[in-house]
Image (cartoon, rainbow, N blue to C red):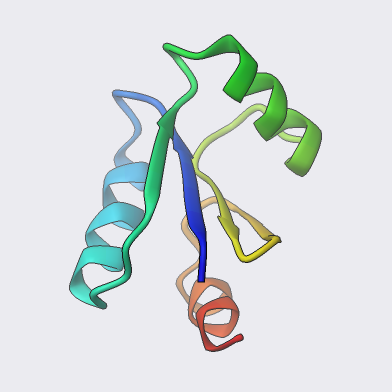
Length: 76
């Protein structure tokens, strides 16, 4: 199941989300939107939000570190 997480370098909720995925053994692709304007535009287009983290789990978009929504999306 493809998992993308849009992050910035100084976002504590991004760190929490990445730690959560690691604790569950979930591989993810981290995209730092500070360094990549195209990715930032993609994130905003997908989520309608400028804040991070934005998490894309198999096409399901979750804004912020919402553990219960992440767990639901991982179950498919």
